[in-house]
Image 1 (cartoon, rainbow, N blue to C red):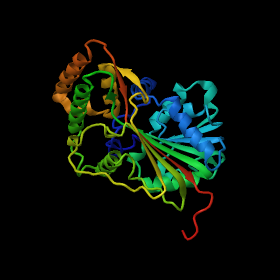
Image 2: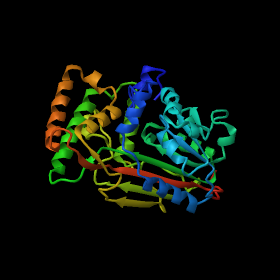
Image 3: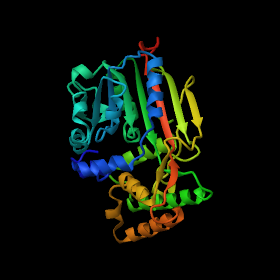
Image 4: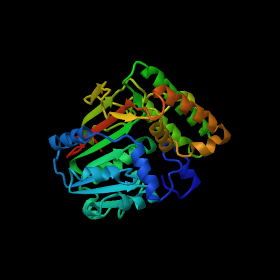
Length: 345
C-alpha cells in the first residue's frame, strides 16, 4: 500500500508496510509462504495451452518487493511489476540480482489504472502483455475495474491468473486440530486489536476483502463476452481463506458466488501443497506481515498475544520445534477472448 496518506495505510494485509529498508522487505518475503514451482508450472501450462501461447511479457500486479516478478523470469522474457507501494518498489532492485534487473520494469500504479495512457511503457503495456498474475491483492481491488484494466493490457488470447493464500494449516500431528485452533484464537484476537473497521476510512476495503476471502474469490465475475476458459482452483478449501475467524470483525459478511455457466471449479484437498515447516517464531513473523501494525494497536494488551504464542510454542514441542504446515489457496485462470461474443457491447 502507498504511504501517501494515513487513510491509504489503514487497509488489510499491509497496514504499516511503509519502509524502504531492504531488511524489512527481505524479512517480509521470508515470512510469507513461497508458492511451489509446481504452482507456476500449472499457470504456465494453462497459458501455453489456451489462446495465444506467446511468452514475451508478463506483469505481476501487487508485486511488492518483486519476489514473484523475479520468479516469472523463468518463463517470460520480460516482466513488469506494479504496485501502489513506492517504498516496496524502491527496495526491489536492491533485493534482486543485478543481472536480472534489465529484464524487469517496475511501475507505481493502482491496478485499476494500469491501462491508463503513459502508466506502463508502451513496449510492455496495452495489448502486448501475455500473462497478468495478480499476487495476493485482488481482495483489496475494485475487481470489475481491475479486470477491465487487465483486459486492456493483455493481448488477445492472453492469460490472467489471480491467486490468494490464507492462514497456515498445521498438518502432521494428532494434535493438528488443537494447533490450528490455537493459531486461529491468536489471529482473531490480533484482528480485534485493529478494530474498529466499520465506519473507518478503510471500511469499504475491509468489507471488499472479507467478501472476497469468504467467497474463495468466487465473488469475482468474468464476463463471458470478454473472457473464456475460466478455471477456479481451490486447494484445501475445507479451511477458510480468511486469515482469522469472523469473530475478529465488527461487521457481518457472507459468501457471494458470481461463477457463470461453463466455468470449471476444481476443489482439491492436498495437505502437502506448498508444504513447509514452521516453528512459533515463523508463525509470529507471518502474523506481523499480515497485521503489521497490531503490536502498536494492542499496546499493553500485546502481552496476551505473547502468552498465547508461548502456549503455542509449548504445544509445538517447545523451543524451536517445527511442524509441517500447508495453506488454503485459491487460483483463478482466464483467457482474454480474441473477439467479443456477438451481441455484446
